Each structure stands twice: as C-alpha cells, then as structure tokens.
Image: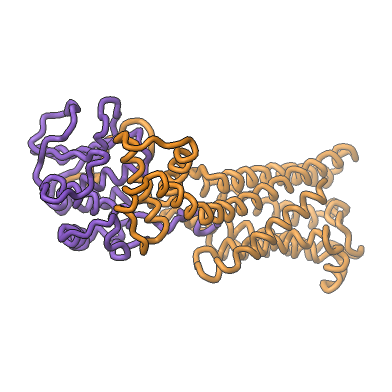
Length: 168
Length: 319
C-alpha cells in the first residue's frame, strides 16, 4: 500500500492548505486503511454521524461528478455510477475530505435539480478543482481534491490484487 | 497428442517456475504457488516425455516406484495451489498440513503392497489394476486429488479473472477425469469391462486429465503474464495520457510519485477534462484512458462495484 507521506504534493498543490489536509488525514488515521468503505466509516465515526454513499444515475448531472448534501440526520455523498470506478472513488473521497475538513457549503455551479432539500452542500465539478489565487471556494475545492488524491493513492495496493500477488 | 500436451504443460510450468524465481525471492506471499509450480513441473517431468521413465526410475530400483513419486508430487502441488487460493479469504478454513500428509501417505500403503516385479512401464498401473492394492491406490489417490480440486474450485468461485477461471475449469476437468478413471479401474477389477470399454475410458481419462492440467498451467501463467504486461504498459500509458492532457497534466504531475499513483492522477485529470468538454480524445487516446482506468480499478483495494444504483450507509451498522 502506498502511504500519503510518499506523495507530498501528489497533485502539485503546494499551498499552506496542503499541509492542513495532510495533517487532518494523518490525525484521523485514514492513511493505510484497506478500502473506501473503511475511510468513510472512520470519518463517520469521528463525526458521530452516518455518511451515505449513493451511486446514482447521471443523466442530468452535466459536469457535476460528486455531491455532498448535509441533512440533520446524515451526510449524503452522491457519485455517478456510470463513471469509471477509479474516478468514482476520487469523487467520493473529494466529498469526504470536505466533510473531514469541515468546509462550509455553497451553491453548485450547475443547473442540477437536487435530490433532497439540503441544509448545506458542496459539489465537485469536473475542471474546477484547481486552486485559483484569491478565490476561497476554489481553495476549498483544491484542498478537497488534494485530500481525495492522497487518500486514493493510499488505496493502491502496488498494482496487484491479493490473488495476483500469490499466483502472479 | 497426449505426449504433446504433457510436454507443453511441463514447459509452461517450468517456464513459469524459472521466471518467478526473482519474485519468489522478494515476495513471501508468492512462494507457495512458486513452489507448487516447481513441484508440478517435476511431476510432469516424471511422465517421461523428455527423459525416458526407465532412466528416471532406475535410481528408485527400476520397478515403477516412480509412479508413486509422480502422484505424490502432483498431490503436493495441487494442495499448495489450493492452500494458497484458500488463504485469499481470511475467514476460510485452511487445510491442515496433516491432511496433506494423510493424502500422500494413505495411497502409498496399498502401492507398496502391489506386486511390482516388472521393469519400468508407463502403463504399469493399467496393467496391474486387477490387483486390489493397485485399484485401492489409484482410487485413494484420485479421491484425494478430487477433494483438493474441489477446495480449489470453492476458493476461486467468486473470482472472475482469466487465471482463476482457467484454474477452476482445469480442476473441473481433473475431477471429471478422476471419475472416469476410477470407473474404468473398478470395471476392470470386477472383470466386467470389455477391452474396447477400457481403451475408450483410458483414452478419455488421458485427454480430459491432461487438458485439465494444461488449463491449470495456463491459469498460473495468466497471472504472471497479466502482471508483466501491466508493468510494461504503465509507463507507455502515462506518456499517452500526458500527451492528451497537455499543459494541465503538468500542474498535476509529480515526478517522485510511484508510476501507478501518477497514472491515477493522470486518469482523473484527463477524465475531468473529458467530462468538462475541455479536450476531445482521439480513438487511441480514449482506449489508453480506458485501459489506464481498468488498471487503476484492479489496483485499488476493495473498490466499489460498478452496476445498478446502490446506497451504502457507513459505518455499515450505525448504532
């Protein structure tokens, strides 16, 4: 398994936010967890609030690739089930990083009809995850993307599944 | 044809054994199947397709003790494969070492009771099956082999990769061949088999059994080749994706990352650009992206599955 510490600057993102993300992930003990489920479960336990990951259709989502909607009972994360699995993982981890860092909500830059009334939401939009100097929302997105890729890299098991490591 | 099949299977296994030596040295978890491959190759070598059986049997006394060695090696090899497959599931019941000792030693007892006066003969068992100890030996050996193959099939039943499918299919063939052979020997023991029936069943056993063993060998080789092909592909895919993403990839690139992590970053970056409509991929770039995404998905520990809409609440059981 690859640890995030092997990947300082994994997304080329070097602002002070990067160290904050790294510290939060390390403090939460998310490095080296064996699966996306384990990472989400750990964050849910830390916040003492369930997190629902929903793989849904994407007909009207346009460039929206991940969505976090906070309700009073749960944190709901939506990803598009038609996207490649590796991409869905990054999108889910992007939203998890927002939750972990306690980012505030915003309005998504999209015409998407939301599936439920939300108290707070954030959306991952393809092509809008890079930091932009002076833009706070873009900074939040860049931090979430940085965390997502650190965590996604930590889920790589070196290119082999357990079967291949024995039989290959 | 059977001789060709035996020789080809031996060469595949011997090749896989030699190619995997560096890997077995570096990775502890690969050693069990590596040893199994070597032992299986040795078992096939004793069939005498490359070196006459008489030469191999001579140091053992020249009275067909080679047959016992051959079947014992086969049992050990398949047992090691099965044990390795079983340990993939942490909750599965492993086979105990004692079970292997019993499965190897039990057939050996009747084998040593066979009157073995004739010199080395490839058809030694077929010629002597009317001796009860010979029938008992063959039956115990094939029953043990069937049991181990069943464990192997069970261990692999959720696996869909080519290697697992080939090994499982090979195991099914070995079980079918074992049933044919025990039926053949039983009919001969009780004296109800005609010469024609014996010949047909004997040929069917040989064909089905060695096709099964060959499929299992190809299954083992499939895992080795999948890894080798992927290691060869990753740097090339990285170059292709970097070219497709252009300047934007440079923002994401980190030269000190392991190549697989860099490939992951590149696929996500490029997929973002495709969804945002910022780039239009050529057919070859599109194929490269799909291939890279498949490699990454295979390299993730416990990834979510693609399929119908799912909702999962974490932790799975919320208090």
